[in-house]
Length: 153
Image (cartoon, rainbow, N blue to C red; front, side, top):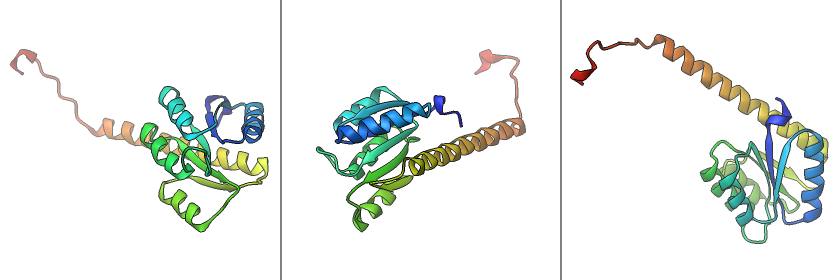
């Protein structure tokens, strides 16, 4: 997948983490925006579509798992990756139940994050292409009937 076509939202209350991730992802060719809290992330997602959201589990105004649900309502196809320095079984289960596609523990290797993002974007692209091909195939099977006298309907 061409990274230039992919946009990422980083949601973390730690400016150091936001800056580091933003720099790394920009250098990899991604379009990046950041948010310091859940409310800011929601506003950003309401105005800009994203392919991926990297979400810290501990935000100042809400839990990252709560934000997962809200972002999914705004952008159903966004890939959501939880990043946490405070892993618990409860947070991992909630992340999975809220349909997070990824779960990374801080500190993490940047290469691991990049591999995860690339894999998830490739899966999303493959799914899109599969659905598009399926739709095209079904269209070919559907008979088209042309009416000569449209005033009758």
